[in-house]
Image: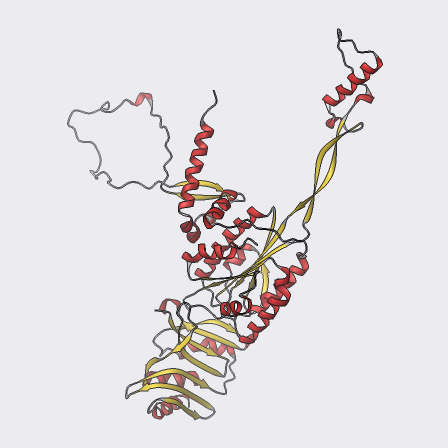
Length: 143
Length: 363
């Protein structure tokens, strides 16, 4: 089911804008900046589902699910009592103050690339994934 | 003839102080002295200073060219070449915390702290101020006793200058007596608050440790009686000892309001604001969990914490992930408030400027 969601998303991405696909209660939404035959430039990926895993378990499996990202992500703040968790690129992978940030509340997971220049408010910047990697990530996060 | 050793010691102390002064920024950012901290002194490694000293040889050892062997004979050994690099000499000078505070104050041009115009804590001291006719023998005042004896004998006409002899009687005895004196004493309490959530790394904590050392040093020089408390928080806050404060690592989310609640409770339970000069130093990477919690924090700060403290200092330590929003939130809400100081600490090199920000107001 989850792999299907990834494949479905891949077929749905044909140009720029927000692309949303749904399959058996799981939803994937991607803000596409640019796309070609091989790769997609993305501002944000959001995957929602009916997971009953809870915040801690979801946070524990996200590093593996997001292995398709160019940087390894690690749990930074896991707070079931606050209803969420934040994972980011491992500190040694952070270059030029840009890193991946994955936020989850156990049901919805957002993936963004953040730029954190000194004196400037943090903001999301586009990042590039191959279509194959995007489909795999979405599939695994949904699963 | 008096020895000149005191003069030499003083001269040496001045050299050490000059060296500390010159390298103050490095000392502030490296913290090598903090690991060698005693109650009253810190040891500062000063590799450039060599202490000259006399070395005595053995009289029987002969001199150059006095050993066994013939002219031109090779010396035993594996033939290694002599070194051509200078050896490392490291001297550790002891500097008292008062001296360090003085250097810090002078270098950063810090104003002396003016305690709040509130009631000061009084401490009781016993002071020998008078003379009593009764008391223990251990407190007998010999001169006054003999004076009284002389007066009595003169008054009675029993005093003979030709045969001066004083025999104090029981009525002549005089004893030192003391009074308990209440003296005003400025007291201060520092509450260090640190975010130990998962986003605060080892380096960020080290920066906080260095800052705390210098803040402590300065405030100790300004207050006779200083108490320090340590509060850590992620989603929940708790009070810990100094050692735990700098070592603990949690992985929870950041809820700054939990710390503010504990700050207020600590003040109310232990430090009545009318008697204490209170300082709060909060350190975080500024990543509060939610905007709604930040709103709660701002209200607590304005209504329940600031009216009780001399100074609320917020230091935002940057990590690999940059810096959060909380600094802007405080700056936006309290930029005109004299009691609030904020400082952005990008890395270790920013510690000196940050200390100046925090302590430069003389509050």
